[in-house]
Amino acid sequence: MNASDHLLRWYPAFLLLALVGLTFWLDQKVQPPPVPRDGSTRHDPDFIIDNFTAMRMNPDGTQRYAIRGTTMTHYPDDSATHLVQPRFIHYDAKTAPVRVASDRALVSRDGEDVYFTGNVDIVREAYSDQPSMNLQTEYLHLTPEQDLARTDKKVTMTRGPTVVEGVGMLYDHKARTLQLLSKVKVTYGSPTLNLPSFGRK
Image 1 (cartoon, rainbow, N blue to C red):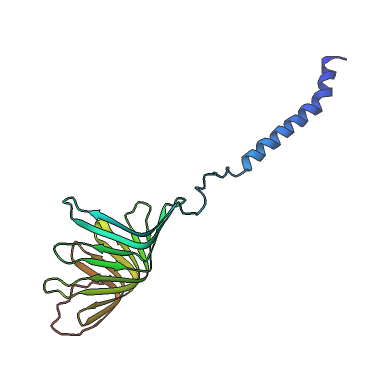
Image 2 (cartoon, helix red, strand yellow; image 1 turned 180 degrees about the horizontal axis):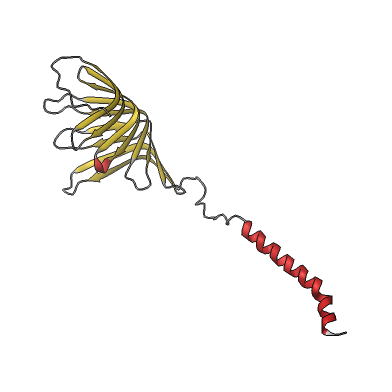
């Protein structure tokens, strides 16, 4: 028997091994990547804090703002931080503190944004000759480092005896401006009341 006869005898075996190898390679390519076993893909909290308080200070050591709540829950898979019954307070020596309260809040991954939802109540306390101001809505996007607050939901503002309603709001605390963006309705309680500026877009 010559070499060619041996090759022909083993050719089916070589072909079968090649097919097995190809099948294994294709199977590996179509398989999803392995799931990490460290729990990082599960939406389970890695820590829960009850009755928490956190503060941010100014460079001179005075309080800039503080936030507290009944529960803080952090999820490692999306770095989301959920707050229950959050209470936020922004301090300003030139005017008066601004307080925000709601049912829940979500803090962004980088901590730069806070999204308040459910019975959002904003109060700027009275100062100098300015009466207290109260705003109520169902959603508020707060950016504390920029002193900005905004919403695209209905807003009801009470300032002294005057009530203002609108849809959408942009509040710039640094510029001391508040804009109601659409469907503004004002009920004057006093013709001599000094109202803040309102704008529409």
